[in-house]
Length: 119
Image 1 (spheres, rainbow, N blue to C red):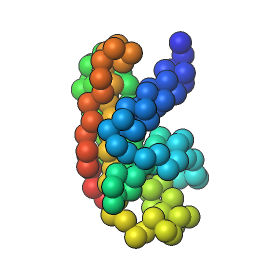
Image 2 (spheres, rainbow, N blue to C red; image 1 turned 180 degrees about the vertical axis):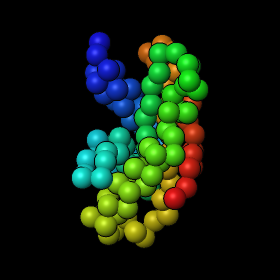
Image 3 (cartoon, rainbow, N blue to C red; image 1 turned 90 degrees about the horizontal axis):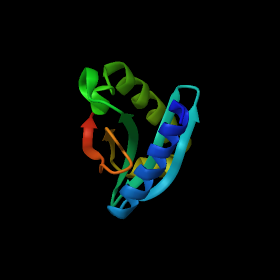
């Protein structure tokens, strides 16, 4: 399986897993000129921008560590753009979550970093 297919599979499983945790999907694979947001979900009264990461091995810090400062800034800019395009979302607080799959992501549950970083 190529990297793109692995990423798409992880995003699909992440969506199902987060839905089972009680979140509601608003949009998936949302792209704009500033970047892409894997999943946009609603958790009760919050809009949640979710970055899904997967790594076969925990080298170099693993999946969650790959969401470095630059990636965070890109996600923040893309989220601000999405908020400007969906003004009804501005009535809700927002947060950024990271869902990290390490190793064999088919059998290992993800690690969920709620409110992983802030703008």
